[in-house]
Amino acid sequence: ASQPLFLGRLIQYFSPSNENITLEQAYFYALGVILCSTINVFAIHPYMMAIFHMGMKIRVACCSLIYRKSLRLSKTALGQTTAGQVVNLLSNDVSRFDICVIFIHYLWLGPLETVVATYFMWNEVGVSAVIGVAALLMFIPLQGDSPPHYLYSAGRV
Image 1 (cartoon, rainbow, N blue to C red):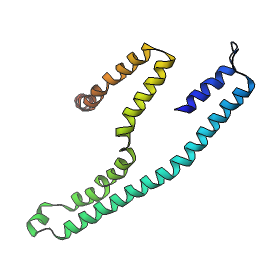
Image 2 (cartoon, helix red, strand yellow; image 1 turned 45 degrees about the vertical axis):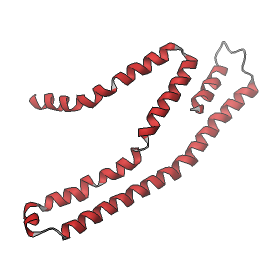
Image 3 (cartoon, rainbow, N blue to C red; image 1 turned 135 degrees about the horizontal axis):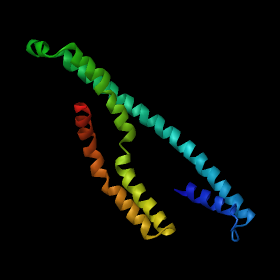
Image 4 (cartoon, rainbow, N blue to C red; image 1 turned 30 degrees about the horizontal axis):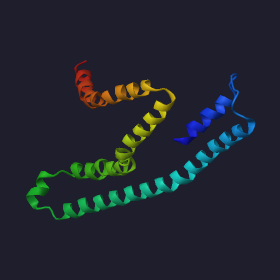
């Protein structure tokens, strides 16, 4: 959240109407942009490595559970289950756990970032920021319903 603020002040230094930002402050803002990028790189890489590792562990555990369950199926259940269903479970469905682990943190991070960004926009723009965020939040339920409707109408064409 601080990198855009540093970048905004740095750009303000180069504007023709600049009167209150000195050269030393511009260097400070440029250093802030560089440090934010560097910290981001050194913080995100180990996090993503750990998340991918956890997702892989979950995928392997689910594949192991499916394999063990397939070995313990009764003869009637084996007759009802095709090999394609098991292959589909092992190849497509289990891989969704990898993706889920990557994006699960956005369930709590998204609302928090929305509140923080709205606060910063409120300081810069005023009431218009809250109206804009409210308009964006009103479209969230519509996005969840539109894909099935779109697929249904696209199938008729």
